[in-house]
Figure 1: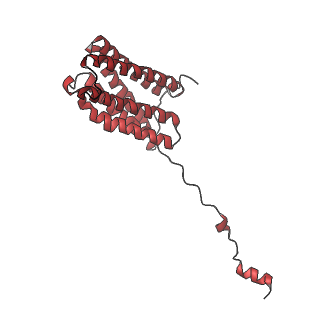
Figure 2 (figure 1 turned 90 degrees about the horizontal axis):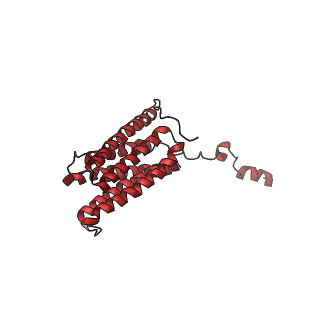
Length: 217
């Protein structure tokens, strides 16, 4: 047997299938708003009930289980989901709101149980400082949403309005202003329900709901 014939026998024929590279893994999918919006809705409803007096002042912390384990945790998971999809703006929105809800819960628990060693006479100013920081923070985020559909900008404006009313109610010791902030929180929940219904419609094969044109191109 010649050397050429030996090489032909010992070398297996190349197949076209062996040269084909495996397909890349499928890109992650889904819509983080399907989790972020409903958890925001229940948190806004719980906060609205606390601010409008449905929950008495002595039981205002009764909203915290929903705010911590549903809204705070749910929006944090939605933010991580958005990160996985490289949706940085959505990750920013859900992540920042998750920290708002969690920090609110920590503030209430801390003041109630004296965790921060803040004297009782300084509690009002502490709450005002917390609210002022978040009024400014949400105002900055509202500017970011100007390139998003109008409904999202409107939601941020309502959130900021609710915070301003509660801040004024705390500073002026005017319960009616805080109560008005609670009703605006209900409006936030209502708009959140509309946005969630649109996301759910698109996710189940229907048409998304109209959300308006961005204010900034």
